Structure formats: structure tokens, C-alpha cells
Length: 89
Image 1 (cartoon, one colour):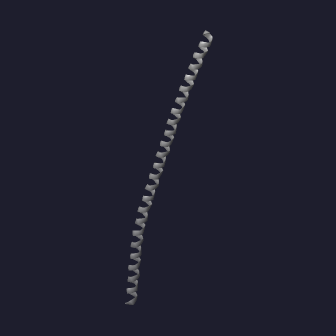
Image 2 (cartoon, rainbow, N blue to C red):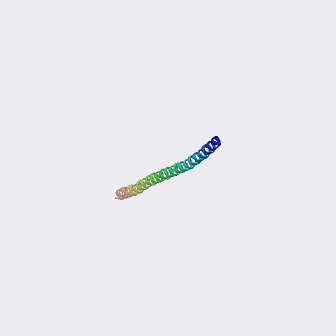
Image 3 (cartoon, rainbow, N blue to C red):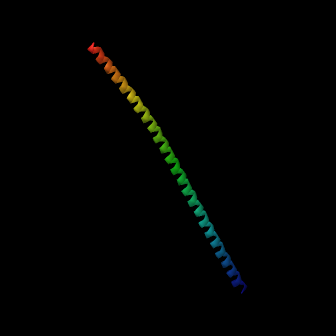
């Protein structure tokens, strides 16, 4: 009789421990999943920011080159006009 009560208590305790360990496993797996999701979100945001910064940098360079091209075109036009005026005289 004592043996069967002890076995019942041991079985109940083992079941309780198994249940607690399962609950803890689920909890920590959830935390790991959240941490992974947060890490991926931060990486995604960092990549987006880096790409946007690079695009903005390229746009500024492009705008500067367009302005420079216009200046060169104006210089070429003025130079050509000056040569044409010199040929007429």
C-alpha cells in the first residue's frame, strides 16, 4: 500500500514537473521567436535606412552633375558664339 501511494505521488510529481518544463519551454521558445522577429525588424529598418541614405546621396550627386552639365553647355555655347563672332569680323 505504501509503495503504491509513493508511486502515485512520484508519478504525479513527474507529471507536474513535465508540465512545468513544457510550459517553460513554450515560454522561452516564444521569447526566442520574439527576439528573432525583433532582430529581423531592426535589420530590415537598418537596410532600408542605408538604402535610402545611398539613394539620397546619389540624387544629390546627380543634381550637382546636372547643374555642372548646364554650366559646361553654357560655356560651350558662349565659346562657340565668340568664335562665330570672330569669324564674321
